[in-house]
Length: 269
Ligand code: DGL
Image 1 (spheres, rainbow, N blue to C red):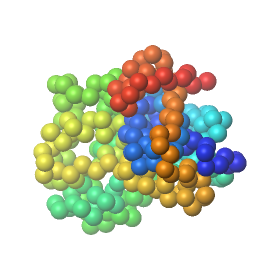
Image 2 (spheres, rainbow, N blue to C red):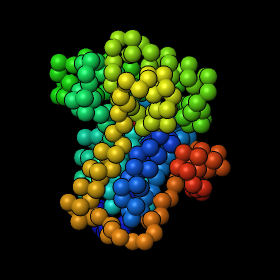
Image 3 (tube, protein in one colour):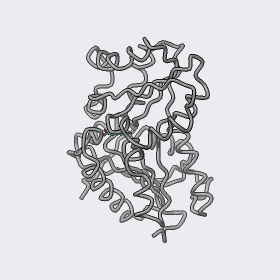
């Protein structure tokens, strides 16, 4: 691969529905790109599993997307990026792979208090990828790495607000605020769906950074460089198709809610 041309779809995957927060940015910026999304919700959360288990799942997802003809892959999962992005690029050398990672660099540039909170899964918090980002871009800043167990499961169950979700969010956000964080990085693609609650708790003086739009811009650059960008200017948006490893009817309800349109996810083989 990739023998796929500009008309081929872009493959996007995550451990579950979180990557829809990236997919919506890609679709907004590049509406003529056909997209195939895989939600591995049957195996979420990745952040609590072993690296070997995650890598086996991820290869299965990427092989499936390549089997769908994907011309490029977007890793819409910070946990996967932090643990194994180099190995994936070595394993699939002919497929452009664009990967999300926590937005430590923009946070370090914009914090006024000098204290940044990074909200992420346990695996991401412990990953060499995140340690490298902090070393490279946040010298002289205080970076508080906060694992948020339970948040991915809440989003997977559609529990995006209400007293219990607010309590679960407060449990990890309040300690960061108490230590002076004025910038919070959403280091997991599920967390943008909790952003309204996070912002409400943190107040308007705290900036929340989601790197999804930057990932979509990077995808556009990579496709253009490789001569793989879909022609712009079509009158209708290209197809977006969904696959899931969870129950398809439950997935259809949740994805439709987060995506904002009815969808018919297919069962992942
Ligand atoms: N959305 C994934 C991420 O960005 C969550 C991983 C998980 O399932 O724990 O890290």
